[in-house]
Picture: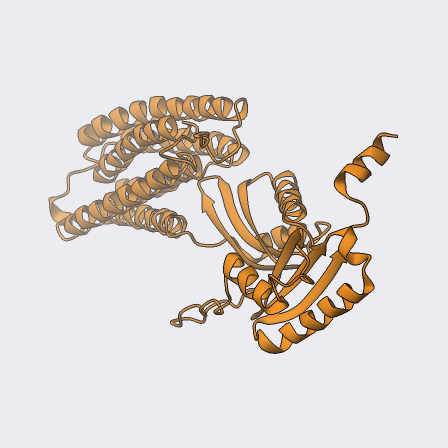
Length: 410
């Protein structure tokens, strides 16, 4: 019965702790933004400070962002399952994209409103002084929240939390601009209040575009940086038994990395040894690169020819499959003749456009020089008559299985 376990390794202790920390810092942000949103909008309306009201709606967008982070973090922490074998971390990326779009919309709305007010300066009422104190208090609160959230986000390597932290920093920067604009407006330069709102809108719009772009890069499976790829490449290439590496591909999934690569091994080793080398290469990458969640390692005996852009991959050469190949080989070697040995095993090496064959003969046949000479002549003739055949190796078993087993028990 096929296994239904998830493909990726589980981290039972790390992920619940990570989820709790993200939830804690997000609830702190919710509390701060709830207080600031209420205070900024209420005081801004009373003080006739339009830039402070705009900043209040910016804080309101933070509240929505925090709730989105909580939802994204709740779903992304679920372990890999049968329908989601790579886990649910991409939910964080989707939330980061939504945050970016939210910032873009907020910034555009503030720009439009501020530009409209700038055209009607004579209609703007006098701003009350306590609006400036509210803006300064908001600035301090937002900067403190940013530093706290960013420290946790970098420790957890959560792009979703990083996006939300920088969202708080954009609020801090906008609150600084609002404070300067309010101070200038109260000093008689009434245009500074809407100008401050325009600057706030631009900062928000720019940050949103950045987050949306980075999230889209991840959603379309953009590769890691050249430096990061080279470090993974070095780890794979230094694995004992690996003689070549090609088609190394990487992509991000939230705070983790998925990779796949083709390693080249000696064409003459067994399948089990090739698998062992591939597993050793995989484990080395997982141990040396904590960000890597999983590596899919494909084993090749020769370097693949990658398709060019817009050109289909080269078709596999028309070589016979094992059953057909052995049938034709037996016929060419004289199957049915009394001199034909019932070879016990055949190993096929598909290399390039030809096949190397290793035949294992019984010991009683190998002990007959005349029959061996005849068989060697027929094998040499096969190289002329079978175009896909490159070489035939004849191997003689020294002891029958029972004799060897009996000797090993003595």
